[in-house]
Amino acid sequence: MTAIADIPDAPRAARRPQMGNPVLRWLRTNLFSSIPNAILSVVLLAVLAKGIFSFVQWGIANAVWLTPANDSSACRAARGLGACWAIIPEKYRFILFGTYPFDEQWRPALSVVLFIALFYLSTRRALWRRELAYIWIGALALISVLMWGGVFGLSFVSQDRWGGLPVTLILATFGLAFGFPLGILVALGRRSKLPAIRSLSVLYVELIRGVPLVSLLFMASVMFPLFMPSGFNIDKLLRAQIAIILFAGAYLAEVIRGGLQAVPRGQYEAADALGLSYWRKHRLIVLPQAIRHVIPPLVNTFIAFFKDTSLVLIIGIFDLLTTAKTAIIDPAWQQFSVEVYIFVAAIYFVFCFAMSRYSRGLEANTASR
Image 1: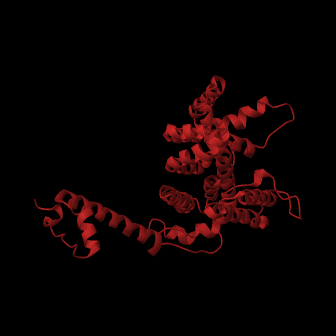
Image 2: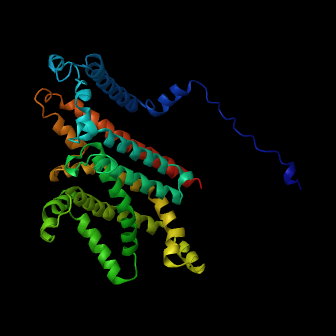
């Protein structure tokens, strides 16, 4: 009987080496793998090339970049041929900071820098400690001092004068910072075994999700003051902030509830076997796994709410998009709204793209653990 070790291995087919330029190989595989695919790729590439060429001609080659102060004659002469980017240096301070006093606009500018610094520090996993919460509290207190003033020799500026990018960042940051823990509590409430808590959570989610954000903002601005005692009034920016928090909490609650349902039942049983309390079980075991499952939809919700802050226009709050619309009311520059909207769109894109890229890195990092 022949030993197994003596049986020669079956000849293996030699692997064909990958030859040629990797770029050409990628093009052949993805764009020109078949005749219909090749035809469609050529047509789309031609349309894309035509669009890029037209934009380069309009936005770069024939564009007007600078003009004398408040003089749009060069832009009007180039209208239809090139873009008028000169409107951006002419109106950028109003677009970014609204009607905030001109000589004091360094204060909202510094507030925007502080917000961006806080966002950056929050993305560093090494800083995810209790000290980060103290940094946030201190920075937000400093931002409040800068925006309001009235102390340390700073002149007082009422919230009616706030506008532009700082207002957008304030609404989005506080809305998500308070809406996220509210969403966690509501998601846990919907899975509670207590009928009263579960019913209240379901009622809150279905009621808030059943109406658009515009209606909530309208209620907060117009109807809510009617229920307040005579002489008692809450600033409309705060009322809008509360409406955004409630709206964000309802949507985030459903996303987090989906993550809780994705956690295996054995994880709950293991936590119970260890004798952990309800809150320690969810804080240490259940919620970290649930949030890991729903990082993409969570970030998608964050991005949507960052853009939805532009709806505060209906209650007279000058966010970034509203100040951009107001900036082109000037008859001398009214014809060049496209350039202003491209500028504002670029700002929104930078923030949204940064959130998207960070979520991809965070998802990849948690998946590898």
